[in-house]
Image (cartoon, rainbow, N blue to C red; front, side, top):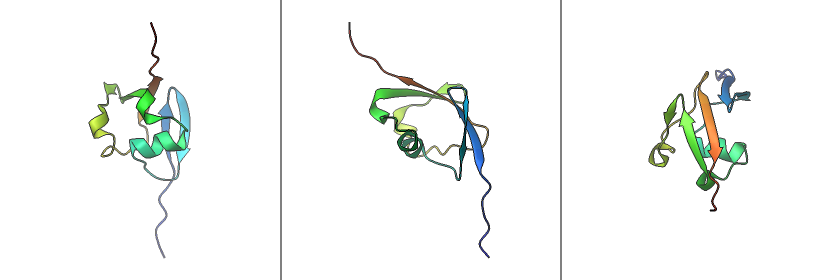
Length: 73
């Protein structure tokens, strides 16, 4: 029998999201229909530089703030 991982709950912009498994930041953006080139992400209180997005996997209890970058003048 294959063990089943329990669901995890993370918070994105204050809203809880239940995931079946840990996801990388790009996978999470895809799931949330967020274009990754148009956002900045704060991960557990720290700005998460884009170069690390592929290696960071969200875990239960993580808190993310995702803000859209708006251009203009």
